[in-house]
Image (tube, rainbow, N blue to C red; front, side, top):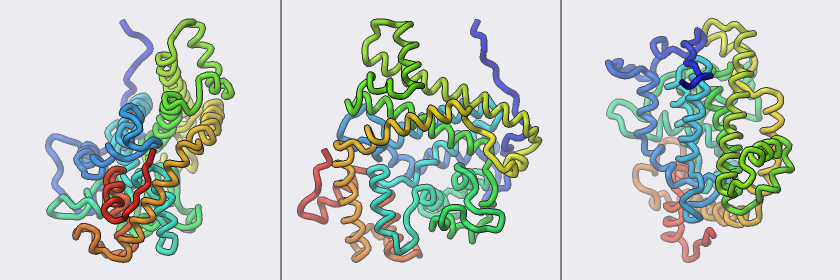
Length: 394
């Protein structure tokens, strides 16, 4: 008999699909699925979701079959988000939906592609991957007869936009510079209450993203040879986990040690998130999702110890992985590919497929939308079609 695990009953502060604020375009309810399950399924069947398979996480597609892509990362975030939601009595389907959607707006070539597009669009509202996700699910996916986008519920759209917290203050002033283009434009169509926190399910999905990033970038970095297991002992949290593994399995080989370390990072982070979140929720005594939105602070969070460990891991990874000479060289060339493509498409939209040429927001935004939707290999293919010389991303 396995002990120590129990399924928590649904919490009163969980988002309730039966009480959803609905969709921008009214639709009949489904006899077989909740509203949040329908949202999840629409995301899974979207073109943007399929393209995540060939979008870079850190390593471009031809560097190896076992490194994370945007798709495998997304699936790992989804699993962690569901685990957190289950433990806290939240709606698992909404947490999963938001995890599956959270990276839809990412460009090819990871953050390098986003930096390039943001620079290209600097005079036209900039580019933000989170705002692009909203743009995809409300406008750019064109599959349904009755509407553009996926016509997702208010709660899903809110979670996409605000999973990292409020975007405006009590007076409606943006908290960080200005609202990203896609979010500002959509706010004129539907009020997502940008000054409040999102549901606990959205907060769980955001924390799951952090957990997956830390654990799996350590895994990929180790397997890529960007740093070694001894280097990780610079981080006290990881040093302690490696000691635990060495005591239990003194002669464990490197590959299994890496996997065991990754497992333990995820487990410790998840357990700490559950403990801290239960404590915050107990103190808040929230009786509805509206009280979560109005709490004024996140209710799903790490313990102070894990906040420190999370930051220490990120501080370790930044110079050794994200800024590693090998990664930077490839990403610099990737940024050039994105910038070159943008210049061509902005100048001559005939070079783009007809359905991307005029979406109502100008030639610059049309070019950015088209490029943002590309996979790594399609961007390379397009560059080879349009230019005599294309960087070799190796």
